[in-house]
Image (cartoon, rainbow, N blue to C red; front, side, top):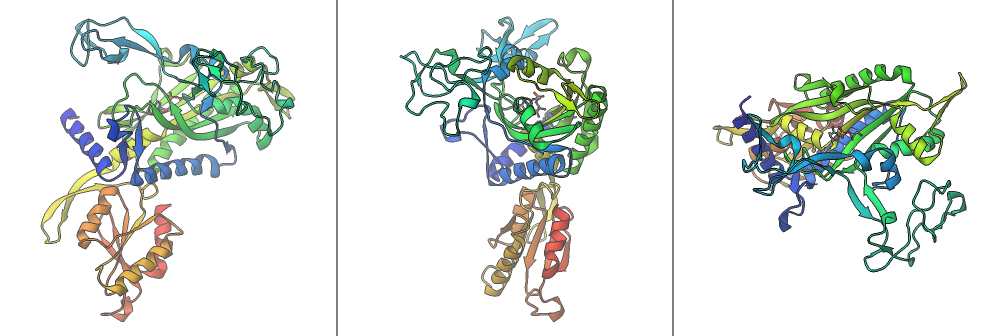
Length: 501
Ligand code: GAP
């Protein structure tokens, strides 16, 4: 691999992403917010298509998985029980020379001597644990007053932080009972009971809602609970564009099973997830299922695979598939005092289920899709001269725009009217884009650059002016081969829906 070429490729991708409306730096006009990104009109479609496809294959096409959507603000007791408050940290080192804050694994080891990767300085602090969670305060906070707790007392009165003026038990609360009265007392800024966290993973709300989800879905083991949503980590060094951010999205499945089946389900889900990536256009040759060695694995995991992809900046993790045993449910059962057991009707046994967790990053997969799709080839310009064509070869099922529709000329009323009719015909079935500006070759190039797999052009043949047999037909152009076929307008919906699903 030539690192120079690859960093050039990455630069081109980042610049294309901004220029064509995939991804912008967040708060850009104020200098940017490090580790946060905004998706533009094309990027948001790509991201949505990815999430929708994941939801389709993980939830809709299976009998054994249900979905949920949990809150981002998380009760501190949840994250204490899960181990995040105590242990969700990266070792951080400061360079005393250039003041850079670094993750310990970024420090250069130069023949046994530690060096700052930014300035080469050797005056470094000892590593110290830096907790990656974003802490916030819930309710109005007044730094001058002492206030009132915002969390209701837990039924046992023991585990949760107490609040004297709050409803104390769910059974005493009615639908209208406010947790925090609108005109209630303010919370003092140093009041620990006002703390909540932005969730560092979506998984914990699944574990915490296990009992409710089991009761309402009436599923039998093995079954899964799926969730897509934001997660937040105060990464020491966000980097590689959207690869490592402070705000990102996850697609997580917690698949509950019996202890004796855990290892089998781990292998099953590793294979399913590899297939998923292949089905969105990432070739198997660029995917790697790395078996995480014992010494790297979380202490509660009996087996973990990292699914990695060959990014232009190196081989990096897209998703973790982990057999987490019964650790999470057991921890929450202990800390909350609520049973999270499963009752097996057949054997009349009660037990805490084990779980296998495929946990994927939305943004990392978006980046992998763009990196994989990016290519340059040669195509003729209007005068037939060959020029470089930038094309994103997205799989049609994730492509942001499925089909662009053009009238050959914008000043011919009949062509324009027919093209708009076709847009109306296709719109209920897929996201389409109408464009009449510029030469037809330019319009094709603009669509190639954002990965639109099909373009439909309405020309004089469509109107039947030269050959009545071609009336009501259009050209359908394929992005990758640039070949055009003549198809009947009445066939378009069928042809295109079968190719983009
Ligand atoms: N519930 C398990 C869990 O969160 P993880 O390996 O920490 O496991 C799962 O995260 C996935 O979330 C990763 O494989 C990655 O795709 C994504 N992810 C984690 N941290 C990220 C970050 N800072 N920026 C973007 N994506 C991230």
